[in-house]
Length: 457
Ligand code: F0G
Image (cartoon, rainbow, N blue to C red; front, side):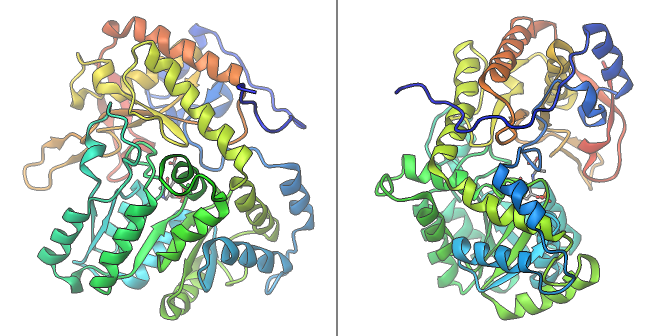
């Protein structure tokens, strides 16, 4: 059969509410043109994020009932630890309430002020947690990632020459660790090849530096390796994942993505020093080391979800359905980052509405218009999220790209929902010349995209 179907049937449903264009006009104005400030009940199709927004399986809900809520040493913890060790292979596992808690613990343990942490691309919370300890997060994406419309198979790869140059320039002792984000979220949801993971690990060993993987979307990355990299077509996803992590010294994980859970995460490491210092910090703010800010039932959901993410039929449907959205809007002429990512399709908002300058936020214009058109919520990944005010001159600096991300929650929407999204985007594209820019009227000092208020120009 050529038709790919959702490899599940629906057991519980949740109504979504249609609004009128007049209501949406009022609602988006009341939200100061920032979709983060919209109440979710006023959103029809929510593509803001794939984080914690997935549907759990019947098995996971059964696990929730089985959850052992003992404070110390619960059965659920041991099931969680066994699953993480089985797939990721690291000797120490520290549960956290989500990914950024694992990041905070790792960087407060291994980084000192003034040091540099290179990555293929840091996600915004990773970047913020490195900066918070006074270190410098540096992105070294491969040159192919810069040509947005060019469909290179592994645009998430690290630029190894740039990594070597950086380590030599800053000095090995000023680089406490190297990171790889799989898949590369900020760079368009693009995968990292096994070859690049291996080569990065080799360089790390040469300089005696630890390599940590930001593992949020590890199963999607494994699927791309199986599809696109020579030698893996017949390997099971779980074995590809095991090989990916065998090259690293540890990982941070947000189980809200490929953990298929609504909350959860962990820090895993082979370094006993990181583990013992990490556990001390964990007790301070997250909880006892066998629950780390999670209920026993959450640990169960993650332990089961990690394996479900690695099921071939699920991952096949997942990647094909994201590509379906990308292909249909690209065929209508909409400029997207090619190829479509694993968890999301990224529209190139700068090419979509070239009449809007970067600092007039074309990504905001497009997210507002998608909401107006059809009640769809997407997210700007451009100069609002990654732009900044230059410390020296006080001038506003634009981000490298103006993207709008359509992130697909796991196992939530069907093909007809996606067809609806395609129609809405194509409609907005048809009247793209009428879109105008925005200016910021109020913003917090950091992570401004969550709460900034805008006004049409
Ligand atoms: N690393 C990556 C690559 C991420 O995409 C995220 C979260 C995190 C770390 C942090 O994990 O949210 O559990 O603390 N990304 C979400 C997103 C928020 O929408 O892409 P967290």
